[in-house]
Amino acid sequence: MQDQNYDAIILGGGPAGLTAGIYLSRAKLKTLILDQGIIGGQMVLSYEIANYPGVEKTTGFQLSNTMKKQAISFGCQIQSNVKITSIDFESETKKIEVNGNTTFHSKAIIIATGGKSRSLNIDGEDTFKGKGISYCATCDGDFFQDKKIIVVGGGNTALEEAVSLTKYAKKVSIVHQFDNFQALEHAVEEAEKNEKIEFVLESRITEFKGDDSLKSVMIENINTKEVREKSIDGVFIFIGYEANTNFLNNKCIKLNQWNEIEVNKNLQTNIEGVFAAGDACQKRYRQITTAVSDGTISALNTAEYILSKKGKLAESV
Amino acid sequence: MLQTNLKHVESRNDFKNLIENNENVMICCGRMGPMCLPVYDVMEQLEQGEDYKHVSFRDMEFDSHDAAVIRELPETKGFMSLPFTVYFKNGKLVRATSSIQSSEQVTSILDEAFKK
Image (cartoon, rainbow over all chains, first blue to last red; front, side, top):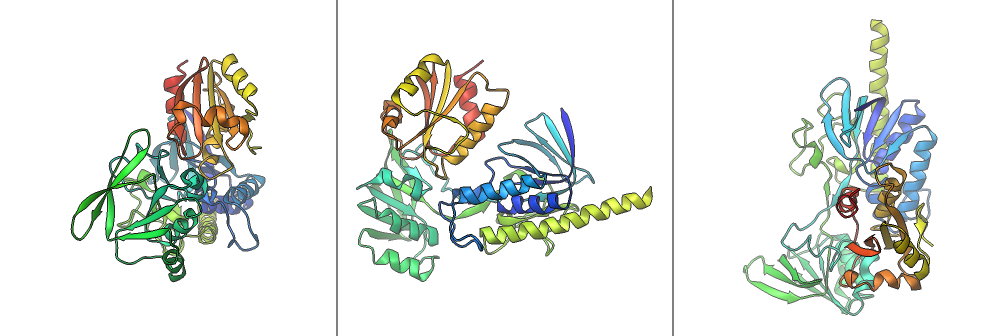
């Protein structure tokens, strides 16, 4: 087992984590970012970003690469695709074990593990993922030329992607569990005036069926409980995101009912020396810009916390 | 051309030589898109590490004419998400996956298909 010491460890390398990495490294604090996936987080999943101030238009991949380079240029160390095998946040010196062979110690932690696409968690979803079930219209839309598809969801993403998928598909059915949409009015209007789109409201998919690929779905009307089979070539699922905090279960970090991390105005959690930032936290708006803001605030408070600890140590010597 | 740090398969001949002359081969056939980038990233890291030196990691541009060698494999019939990732052992296809894969999913296939 290898041991390594840092001032601060940031869990998660999305925009919140990378921003915190930039600030802490620039403050000459020895900082490590650990991510269980690719650096950039959900930002990498955006084909086009047009509302990040100071950058007219870019891709999520480019923006995340720039942030990563910026963090590294200030001395921040970054490890992606690691597996966190053990965590100790409660001791004064925090410990994170990765891949079962290395333990990182630090004075403070920032949890910036972001969110992940919510799945339906119903029979057949795993089996037909990539074989008819998709979570990215821009990536997979052209596989569905002249096909019949379903879009699941009622938010902005679902309605906008449904419209964009009509470029390829001959028919798009939007299946949504409520009788109204959460999407903004203009997105609903765009979908409503598109002749290729039909609405299947107050309904939900209960099962995916097929052989080599998806062939049909079972759809239940939520009011009548009537279930019918609908022949279909593809299903795109856009039902929002959930906080990526499963690894915190039973780790004493206080979560709300949606498993989002509860923080105070300084983005400090209920555990001393443990801060949180970005989409993993309880918050209303989840944007790259708000994640960057969180990353900044959490880093500045973390730096203050670490320096106060160092000061106390110097006084006691 | 894919902007990754992996070696690229650029033609049918490249592909043929690769699978004929290497015992264990993993090829990710995709675009520079959101579901493909994480798989390239995992492959780049595995290639740099010590545990999978016995595996040849490559990528291939999905829209290139010669990528038909992967797009039209019987095993990728029914695939409707990028990337198509294929694993060859001694020239024979042993696994194929469609869509994004995590590091754990990739290493689990490598460990099973390309046992040392």
